[in-house]
Image (spheres, rainbow, N blue to C red):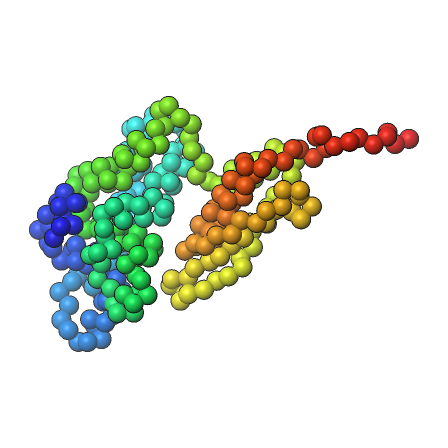
Length: 257
């Protein structure tokens, strides 16, 4: 399989890689058809995804611990959150063309499952578990550092630039506090999809009395992700059209007696 070349590992237990690429919709169809299932467990990648997430977190933490000994815990936590976050992992999954190899049920195939961010990221995390189970810690670690951690750190160039903003909600809160403005209100405006694959639409609304009133609107697989993206939009808006602190530049009236 060409994917093995990209991963830099040829599987002794090929069924592990096949399971990592098998979505639950495909596993259910196989079970319903009565066909024999040679994959371990239930046949889908959900349990492998669980393990892969843990392997990714530990490898990333270890890499950051050794590379940035001068950073404090908060900085390392924010950096790790970025490296293991859906947006970055989706980019890695797309570079590996994981969507071309996923095993999907007919329904997911028709609904564009090969390009769904959540499915691609889940499959990538399951592949990390498969690498760990088949090749051991060193194989999984080497791939994660080479394909997920190191390229992004090089792109961010943290040795010469400031730590990027990753917690947009906290950054927005601090920006509004610094200018004496009210905090935003996060409103869930839409919730759709099946229980296990919901999509949430959230708006980040500034106070109606704020001259910089702006609404950030975003979707996410969780409310927290949608809130973060909506907060990012508001931050970008404020940066493009900054509003002075209340009272600064305003005409002062006569002193009250």
